[in-house]
Image: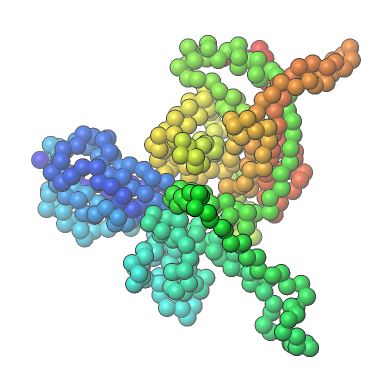
Length: 451
């Protein structure tokens, strides 16, 4: 018999910890390899951690609601295989840090101490306040660096599990605070003729939300955790990026007819359903290769041009919420590879089976608003990306067809493309040319293509 340490797995590039929401196996219970052992939640997504081997769960080192750092041991499994002794495993579980954590490159989130200490004259932020609220190392470091006091943190609404404050919550608060400070009159300005009722020229009054009246017939529903995260991210994006949207209409008749003629054969040959999404993504990826400035992120005053093309595809969930699974290195896939990725990620998104790493590291996003019968939209950029494309419903419309014999009016399959981009770093020439190129590629789809 051997005892195996089960460690919290890596859950995405920026995720440094996870909260145990539910144990699925009691101590003493038997579990098969790859069966779900525990449910966890991070700032990004809920997930499950499977058992690495078959065996008996002999020790749970954390309770439900506890937060576990990535790489830390959180359970001990007894197996039939030969391995480390039980005493060694138990001792390591309680006292040793994971080797992975020790070898990581230093980041504030990875190696922040229990109380974040930055030499800016502010008291350190504890990991847990007197009210019982938990603050992650990353949140504490950002707060200390930005001079945010513990009392100020306590007043910020959190969208994480049980109201925890996430990085996005804090960054949104800082963005709002900065804009409010810019709008406020300078305290150092010399006073002019005193007039208590007047305001300095150029001062923007702080907007106040109108009171919401509620009648006895109205239903009040608390936002769930995911909806709070979506709300915070959308507001953060609008505060961060200067959104501009360009529109192009594409004639996708060749694409529609080819799919209609080949979708059955495609499924019989490859066992995959062929939707319009992978066909559109194929054109998007090609356009990104030709206009790499779209595949970028903004970091302060720096623009980071991404070498990998990781395309996110916004997906609506049965709950009404939204999630964006990411197809990693989409430029390395053909139409079949894209179809498999789209079908797999979409199916697992609907049943909440996505892994945290599968919604991380996107470099460009596509949203299919045509699914809901919409002809166009003005999508919001997923930070820190710089652009997002919305594809509308494909509709039959009368259109001018240019031929060598002259122009004709015909019934064509038309689709609008709506491209929102961050005008801080993407100008109209790039943003508009990119979406026009996507349209051109869709219109030039080869009607004689072999599956």
